[in-house]
Length: 192
Image (tube, rainbow, N blue to C red; front, side, top):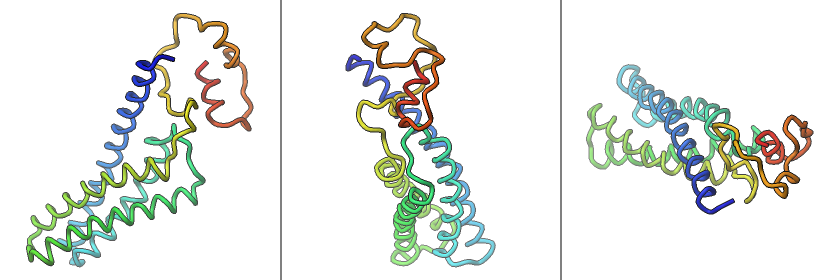
């Protein structure tokens, strides 16, 4: 595989992953910011408690979306282990948001709902950058180098046959690869 085509595939995978991350993140953001504003503004919860509750609900929804859609092409850990790490990292992201909110409402003494919502947005953006980096590093792991798990699914089958040397490493089209084989090998077989 040439360097250019390898870079193209990795870049295409990254763009698709970032797009899905952004969509799930936007949905979680609506739940987080909207829920916190409702809990703080209408229900009378304190600013930090409102944020903690809304962020917790948004985290559960985000984990489900990221596991089933955004990062499904990456090697996943078991649900319990991956979930614990995910929620631990979300807790760090929540602390980032709470620090910003605490600074704005406490140190700066800005108590308006507009100031609170602005602090939420800044905190969420900082936390989002941390979350994306940390999810890829510790929750939704990349396959080992050279494995097909990093490659996006091709849009259309190749029109030119592969050289004979390359055919030996892939099963014939339609050939079943047992489920006990590593995930990357099954993915490669499906792509052949």
